[in-house]
Image 1: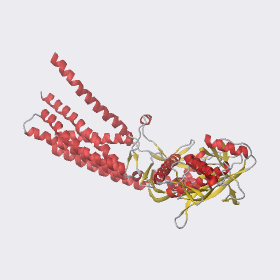
Image 2: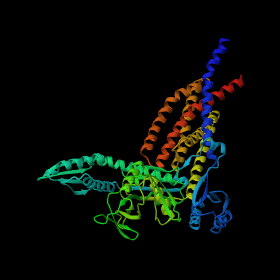
Image 3: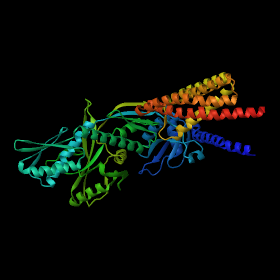
Amino acid sequence: MNRRTNAASAAWPVRLKQLLVVAVILVLGLCAMPNLYQNKTQLSISALPQAQTLPSPDTLVQLLQSHGFSVAQIGSGEPTLVTLTSQTASASAQAVLAEALRDQASVKVVEQATAPYWLQRLGLSPIKLGLDLNGGVLFVLKVDTDKALEKRMENIALEAKSQRIRDKLKGVRIERSSVAGLELVALPQGAAALQQLQTALLAQFQHLSVQTHKHGNLLRATLSYDEAGKAAFEKQTMTQALTTLRSRIEELGITEAVTQRQGANYIRIELPGVQDPAAAKRIIGATAQLSFHALQEFGGKRVKAEHGMVGLDPLAIFTGADIDSAQAGRDEYGKPLVQLFLSSRGGDKMLRFSRANVGQPMATMYSEYIADSRGEIHQSSQVISVATIQQVLGQRFSITNLGSWQKAQDLALLLRAGSLDAPLTIVTERTIGPNLGAQNIASGFGALALGLSLTLGFMLLWYRKLGVIACMALVANLVCLVGLMSLLPGVVLTLPGIAGLVLTIGMAVDTNVIIFERIKEERRQGSSMRAALQRGYQQAQSSIIDANLTTMITALVLMSIGYGPVKGFAITLALGIITSMFCGVVVSGQLSQWFYRTKSEKGA
């Protein structure tokens, strides 16, 4: 009786281990299931605010067919969803509909999940495909931090002049302002005023350093960024650019984009599935800034407006940094406008200014960086609106006279996502069509199927019964890897990633080969099959761990310093090492014990 009890007690840890292995495979298999159902591309047609109704589905079908597009399915709701027979023609169809319905509707390309509803309810989705498999657009942008620093010094100079006037600091003048620094000059009797001004500027602008010296009877204070300050400013500028670009991409509705820093002053943006590169380029590459100024007829900054030139106070009342949200809309006459919602700080600025200037005009200035014919970057500014302040304003008001609905929408999007302090230059732009992406998928998975078939065939021929176990573990490894890639956020499958899948198959087989050769050695020395299995798995573990650990180090290095396809390969390789060790050692070990235990029991 005690022997049976002890045997039952000893069997529980084994059964628990088997249950855990089965549970892991089932969970990861469930996560891999959505990959059997690929998303479909559809056209989403929504009515614009000024349009009463959308064209009927029959009218839309006739319009598309007249341009050579075949419609597979069309809905009748709001928005209207159109599915084309050829999924890769969605971008061309979008351009046709956008042109034909430009005053009635907005047309977007969207992806619709085709997995069963119960899978979607579980929050499971297919592996995100990279640029080379799904098609899309690649941008590499250069962030001009030198221009941003130059603009910062100009703002510091304007703030210094405003502070001097506001605090009535006499005997101090601003003599020179450049990228090298801002120089304040004072007579001996103005030393206290100079000290007060530089203290206020140092408190307002971080990372500034000051150097004071005498030149004759004059006191000079130079405010500038030292090397550490420049490095901190460049880091802050790059972080702000990355944050703003990610916000803009989210506003465009692109959920699988890759936005990352590349080198010192470059940003790499991958937009898989984007079939309208012109719209993406227009929004992502924009360096728009919005600022609000009082008019100043004499001595102000002259800026181009719709009807001639306008003089503005160079120091802005508030800027786009004080805007919390913005929405495009129309006024009572149907003209486009942008409704602004200011932050509490921006609302306070607007309240103070409007309270003191009721009945006075206020100008809205739109600025952006553009490249001239020689490739040099310059800031171009234009007054887009001059309005009289009719009443005291707070955190909410509108910008009117924007000309077109598209301009209002773009401006609202840019204001919601945030403005860029540094000019951006697109140095690389590459578009990969969906047809090429489909060819890459077919070629990549064809190579994967061929490699898997040859490997399975070799293992079956060479190891016979053990080969069956290896094949089962290999299929489990592939299922677990696909499930893990589908489960983890941020994992994107690229063409080099498929190469990583093929390599994972070889690595998983290496694990089984090492174990099976040890088992064959034990059998040649006269051990029973069960004893040979136990010793073979135990003795091979150290070699397997060493081999996979060195490969994992390489994968982690590639993951940390690589970009785009290289990083995609490294991620697939690293996850493949984890699943290979699990399936090659744990799963195949459990299968071997079960297979040969069942066989011995039948023989008994």
